[in-house]
Length: 405
Image 1 (tube, rainbow, N blue to C red):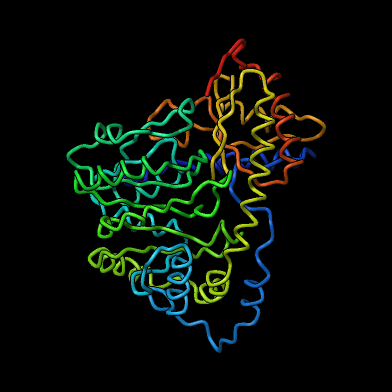
Image 2 (image 1 turned 120 degrees about the vertical axis):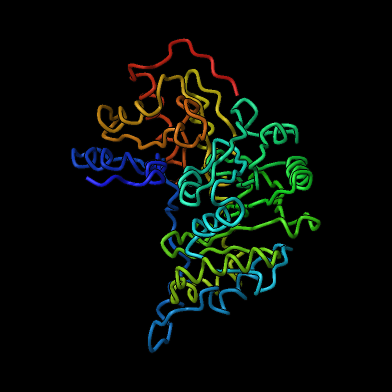
């Protein structure tokens, strides 16, 4: 039999989705599964977007320009301007979600054997994007005890090697909910200049900062304009994950030129979907502001519930709509299977995302899980009570564990 490529072996199964067959089996047994593992917003897509789709008057769905429809690029530019972020329409390329934009950016910055610094735990699909681009992720390991903050520039300097070409930063963070401080962003900027690096800024959760905290876009550093590649998406801010419309924005014309070639190779992004997001990009800030308040209420319910579980000192998420937490158990992978195969409380159980899959470094995250705030606060509070009961019933519970964060 012919052998598969070496690159194919580097693609990991998604820790977010690989337990789906076990969840379906639990539901088939009559158990209600509360899905805390996936960031699929439960609220309806804005009716303005649906109306725009229904009202499209198109004689045919032709290829869109590879760089994106002019209307969509202009709408992205206007959206950024509403945040004080300035990209001209011709500095924006429309992509198939932020995922494609990140894959392109990694390939442009370090493809073919280069390295990119990434903060772990990180969005798990970064690892697969990097494998596709033949890029090695060089991790800067963050700890729950520090609220998943890295603190100082020295943490970055000590991880830079001869093949390092860039830094990838998700802010606010998926999976931890960390919102990096201004001092931390300045540290990244300083190191990028010192070592001649690009900075790939994943800001898809920009709106979702809790406690009245400041939204800090990396684009505030004007002197880094030629180094910054901004990645964004409509998926989470407008509850439209299935639309798959994102973008890459940069003032670096060389990067834009190469990125356009990637865009041309995949032909185009769907025409109707580009058109349907234009109204929200132009006028949707208030909608996202309301979402932030709802997610903060949900965050509070999860935090309070986790704090009532023996052996858990929960991390208070600062933004996005996720948190990572350490549990007093031997393996979150085994615990997640236990929940779906062997446990229920009041006819319900949970689907969790085991933490190990969010780390580049092998062996880390075995006692951590990511929790997504995808239900109302009352349901999430009930889910935390189910989690408490499951931890107590789990055979691999670490008795007397003291977990500080």
